[in-house]
Image (cartoon, rainbow, N blue to C red; front, side):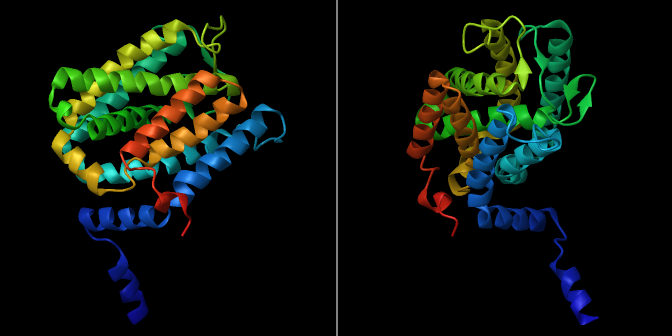
Length: 283
């Protein structure tokens, strides 16, 4: 009886308790989440693309979605204390936009150019992967956080801040899309001049990045984000995973420009003191 009561006492009873417990969980598993998972992802995805992995493991949509959620978890959990009603509305509106613009893109080719999904990315609704917000929104948040860390006093200038973050999101897509196309995640039937990715894709990303950056800038308190990312060592671990995963995949396929961009982001993380020896050690 006493043991049962003790277990009940260990269950978090408030939002702050849950946030504290989840913070601890991420801190204790940083290496596994941010190093092991992307490295494992490289192996599984390349083995799938090269035909070395049998069904149902090859390009298993649920595994891809689960792995993405795990790698995103440091960012999501770090942002929870700052996600008040205004921020939640902002993220909710951005989620609706992500589904809407992807639905339009899949069915009309606007604004990214004609494309279709080549592999299973998990459950689908009306031709759009259910996990789309998990794939898209954190990319923008990572770019935003990295920029406000590196811009220092210049971050106060709204136009400069927004343009810098939008450009950073586009640079992240320069890493993402060639690797995803090489894997067959999505296919542009007419190809493209940049590792089979058309210019229209990046034009579309200018639109989506602008809307997403504005939504996050309006939804979250910038000073609170800066304080949180400064004190929370793991808040940019998702960006570490992104660099390892897509940098490695692009390097395998000989996509040297995207690989170089991944190296640039790694240098940015080093400057921001976010790629530290504690993360690189499983202890």
